[in-house]
Length: 267
Image (cartoon, rainbow, N blue to C red; front, side, top):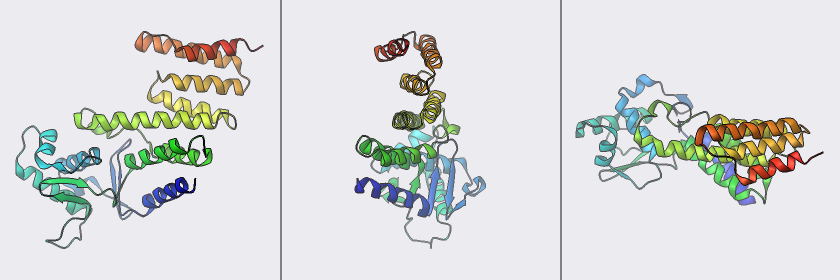
């Protein structure tokens, strides 16, 4: 348990003290020494695209320059990459002495990656918080609760919403969405007995992301019963049934139907 708490504290400390922080959820913002970097500092959109690509594939091995350019730009030349990379390094490290290696973008030959030990990235932190939450859930729910709450605070919307039609952003967008849906539901489950209203709110947040997320309806049904509101619990099931039929042409899972039967049998 101490190990989970230590990991949690280290993550919080990294967020507070990192000299470069990158936010990608709901908006794209980069902070340098606690100061927001304005768009005009980047110079060209290709500079921002290159940084966002490196963020999107941050957990892979160093990425080859040609693979990066093939993914980003239909018509490219070597100069495009050099100018964009120079733009990133100059913006992140405006005072770096000439002829010294950049400290945030690691180069290995003609391959590149972000140094995750020096750069704080919200999606990276979100994933780590949720891993701590998942591992401590059931054995130390206080730590799990804190970890999930920290993750939820980071989620301000879809990953890189201004690049929603770019193929290279879709994997990270889907991954972060699934992670946050799981965090909402598991935290709602933890809070079911002590704060059913909060469980309802958290489940609704999940439904705002995916209206057919059946786990969220079950949580709300249980929470309404905990509040003694049987009619609202049944109404929630009916809404779930309608949404699943409209979206996918399916009916609720046996687990959800069983929960409805249990609710209807309450005198």
